[in-house]
Amino acid sequence: MIKIAPSMLSCDFSRFGEEIVRMDKAGADMIHLDVMDGHFVPNISFGAPVISSLRPYTKKPFDVHLMLSNPLDYIEDFAKAGADILTFNLEANSPVYETVAAIRSYGLSPALCVKPGTPVDTLFPYLGEVDMFLIMTVEPGFGGQSFMPETLQKVSDLRAQLERLGLDTDIEVDGGISFDTISQASAAGANIFVSGSAIFKASDAGKAIDDLRKAAADI
Image (cartoon, rainbow, N blue to C red; front, side, top):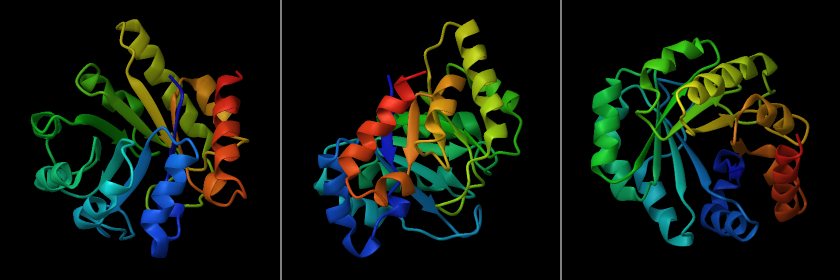
């Protein structure tokens, strides 16, 4: 199923709660929240207390990407804050199976991410272990970057491997997803699309989300 997840990294942080409500009313399928520690990626965003304060503004799933060096140390914090999906990076310092088990122990969906420079076959040992894979289509850390089309081969290879095993696992893409790039990502096999600037810079967020969804479906 095609899902659109607005990236709150592109919102007006001074109106964070209102922006969550706006995305909910605009038809977002989930809310994407990037947590960055200034160490694993060269930027700092927000942590569990902020996510906890935002949780009352919507019932839509919180899709939280932990761009942290040691995500395992913070699973409990983000579970209690109201996350529904917790994504962590394969390149982080936390053991994958232990981190997945910790996420599931709180009743949350675990997801595994790789950066653009990491070979996609490093994810293959974990097929069937997580509920979603996130393929970064830009270098993580900052919003508004240009889409890297070479990352789509990773999406295609991952989807092909999942299909060989009879798995219908979600593949999410994040970075430079716009009206011009979403159809390419969808054709490669992605079905969840994180989009920031294309939605938040639009005059009508609802129309932008609808248009993105239609572009992803029209392949």
